[in-house]
Amino acid sequence: MQQNINIVNKKAKFKYFLNKKYIAGLVLSGSEIKSIRLKNVNLESSYCSFNNDELYVNNIIIKPYENSSQFNKNRTQIKLLLNRIELNKLKKEINNVGVTIIPYKIFINEKGIAKIEIYTSKGKKNFDKREVIKKRENKINLDRLKKNL
Image 1 (cartoon, rainbow, N blue to C red):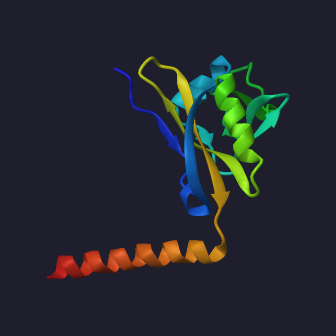
Image 2 (image 1 turned 135 degrees about the vertical axis):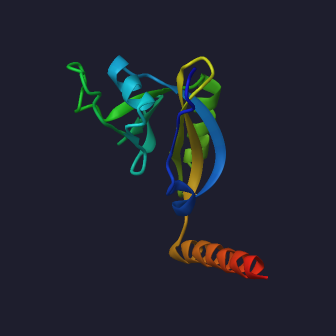
Image 3 (image 1 turned 45 degrees about the vertical axis):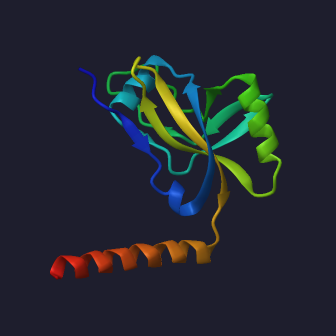
């Protein structure tokens, strides 16, 4: 019986307008996949970049597994597995001004393989963020009023 593992970057929807979704595989070591299964991962400051026509995710914080002597703390990049057509599409989209690739979610699929959900995104301005907060507060207040009636 396998438990459902979803590690989500909660601040991504607040900081960025998420556009197009891609699902990629990850090149991980054994101790890293064990840490992911224990949900010892932080995606908040991570981003994706191209290096020699390959896509890498940077600044993912994977805490070391308890009994692991092989864990590499100095690893800053993890290679993403996408086919060539998807990589070319991503390169074209990144060439637009202000567009970046953000990792949103790490999950384990039905076969037990770790996957990452990435989005092409554009950063929000401060007034966009304030508008989101206002909408959320208005919704909460309406729900309170409906509950009291």
